[in-house]
Image (tube, rainbow, N blue to C red):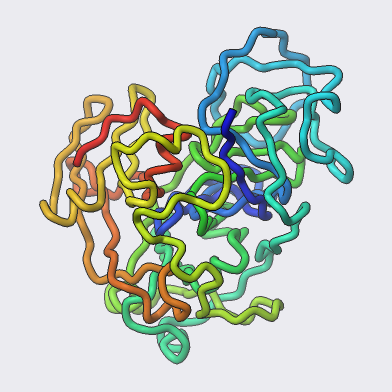
Length: 373
């Protein structure tokens, strides 16, 4: 059985899609978390460094749910049935050493997890971010290079991909709202863990999959990947994540040169990789809703400019935004090819939550997705 390998990194429950997709999730109590490689914004969390998960979830047989202590994170329950595995060590393919996670409780079969390489916190999250003004950031950022733009309670912040690509998670508080902003260069699917319960969270969809909070769902906050020059022009008083992170990294350099070649499959095992309805690394605008999932191919969106999609009885407008460089092409992120980005709004013109992952990730996790191409 093929599996979708996922690298883990610390995060604060925020997710941005691979290839430039973004999502934001709020954390009610400010607890930090960790996550695997994938772009997104969400409630604070941390990355679990050595895990992977298949895209298609199996139907479970055991339905007993143990009583657990009260937890502070107030997030909705999916109604997903919980698997209880007392002898979890016999099925888990990754080490549980050093984890305080309740491995007895899970919603995904344990043998579907694979090591992603780095161990727990092997890719360091930024837990104490500092910010500079747009004017000061101009000395380091360039033209079309991509940023994650987030607005909460009227406060706008920008998180350069040149920083996120090396840390993958920024645990932040915007106003009174704890958020995590994440970016996974590989697929926009990842596993995160919160530092309070060490529950493992799947970045694709924001679901708790192993631990005390298995079956819970994070709240996604709207966010978008935009060009630095556009962000600076529209938000002159915004704050920008500083490159003075306390870590020594070659910010601005892409460690995944050529990774986003559209016809190139990922270098790790993925379920449903033979789903060739779209090239494996075609970016899509993903609208994942309770009634179903819609994926709008970037190639179709770029050609049309604007596409209207009805999801859950709501009419959404999906717009192509030209002039945004890919962070995963050339060695220098500012010199990346213009691949564009996207924006999704409701009938009132308000930004709604969406992601922009590579197609192979959608095929693995949402194989029944409706494609617009």
